[in-house]
Image 1: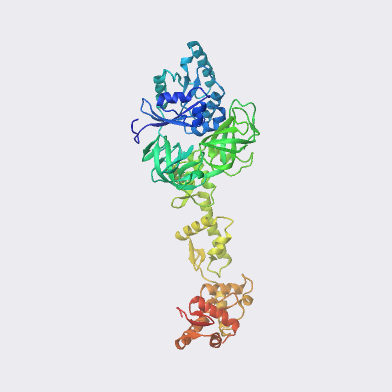
Image 2: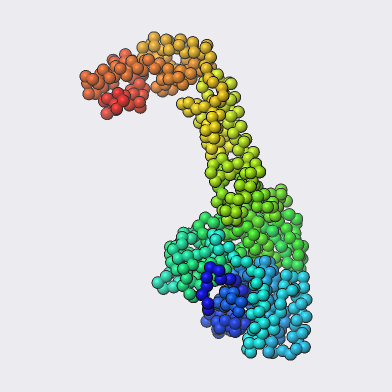
Length: 636
């Protein structure tokens, strides 16, 4: 096989079709690989689980072939491998024609959005021309009205090799317009096999849907959220430095035990997608259902390589008619990891049979009421990227990052960034912080609300410099989240629209001058307090109610630092405290320690005043407590 380069064209091809129609023999003839690897498969002569083989087409496309089992009992295994397929080989045995699993496998690949394929009529060596003509007509009826109707039909024999060249030509023609998978996006691989390799530990395999995986990468296993490190990467048994989107990949992992991983898990770039048990979806019912599908049913949900039991809850209508569709929620019994646009398959819980599928709209959703407002969900489904981002931003109460938005909409950060910048230019959103976005109306509303509250407070309490910032934030907690308040407040302060002093805030365009009457009352209060020595009256009594005139005087004095609050009951003038500090300094100039008795005598107060005064002296650093005594403090 020719070595692969970054420009190598890659594709994943999957087989599909009824049991014993020659899928495995077809792959063996094309690749030389027997994909029946299990002893039970050898013994029974049927495929039970997924098989894999590499192939390079004459056109130079490097294929990873996924051979799936055809028995109806193993459809869930088939589903584990057919996700992420670029082209399907729909295998129909020429001696039997269209069979039940032919129809179900065809329905599945259609539901998964596979649009490229080749119809392979195998066992051509067993039938004559007339019979093969009948089979072709049956196939034409089967495919009528489907994306496969115009796809090539190749007659093939795994025994003689007849049709091999035509099959290769058809595959190359179908893949000619295939775009490269996104190798620069965050890595994402659905795990379809897990095993142990001696010397390397736990190994997982799967089709790399997007991104790259390199030796040494730190990834995560979801939905458990386990961090892991890549020890070795292989593509079809060959060790490589990196695997790229569109390759069958085996990854040896450090940091996880075999028992911690299972088929259906996801290996992905850290933080790229989140697990969820509720998904908003567009559900599409198969057109051959026997009757309408009801609104709330237990089902088997297939995404990637997983099968999860859950409920399909229709959000509109009482049922879905065969061939119809509806907005719905999938509520799972354990979480999965989906991205917007992922295709999934829904099978009946019992007996298991495919009934429909669809696409993921919101991969991390909250429970919705049936028949509730669905306008937002319709935007998420079919709106432009800008519309979807705007909807998400408007739902946030505080600024949200580009990386978080990109994760939710399922786009790269660069693509999301460009769309957000367009919304910014159109004045739909604001960027209050670098790489943080908020709806413009919420941002302007937050700024206006803060200014309005600050101005109203200044008008109501002219004796006060302004609103205490902590009280302002607490008073607005219903109107806005704390994070938004902090950002908006800082913006107003930096723009010079607010003036802050001693944790009080007022409008910057309204110079403050306390009322003359309050200033005169403060002078009178200072005189009254100083007349008492240090045995001042109880502040709780003379202040009265919080908004009384006396309380306003006290608030002004404390703000101007002409008054000092020792505790809730005691307020002194700054002059009284200055005199006390001088007495302390004089005492410590002559003595190493100060006792309670000495302090009471020095300040001419009773113990009622001495205890809180000394505690205040400790807090401001004039004294330091040592047992029942005080020593000189660092600021004494």
